[in-house]
Image 1: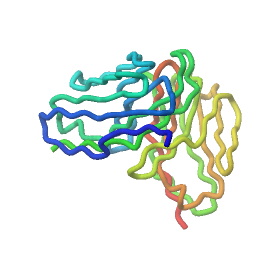
Image 2: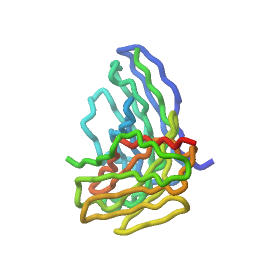
Image 3: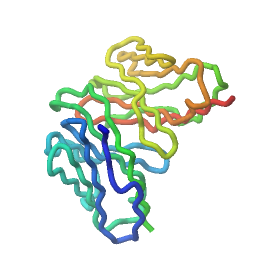
Length: 117
Length: 109
């Protein structure tokens, strides 16, 4: 199936641990994103990569580090997890050939529910 | 700071009625506008996209855009209980696809 897939679906861990979330898209899109959705459903952009290059880096603690080995993958590594990191993290992709063209909708993965205890 | 504003609701309508969801945005250079539907525990899915002023219809859904007023809306005709979800307005302009906080819609039989 063509889709955006992210793993794991659920992640429960203790404070201070380091964890990673993986994302892959086989839609042939040029741009991938990480969004954080809090308990009130607010989707906030964290990072965006266009063809493996970082183009958006919102105010996110540097404990969060995205890595894009190729344009089909955008992984998220989180160091020293804190209680406030608990949220649902969504990976998304879109066909945006350049930073001047923003007409494409986002295709979302199924989300990773991170719970930090 | 670019903002997208939505009434959080919940908006409650009876089955068969028209549900009207509204969204305003602050960035005047915004080019593309989207409505996503998100069921509880699921990921957002695209319902409608609109790029120019006026109305765009797709089945029971109509998106309306007024760039002068920086306003975009979504009308759902003949609302069904299966339409009960959170509706997210998204605006794309300079670099950042920005979402509103969503409006919770409840369609009661």
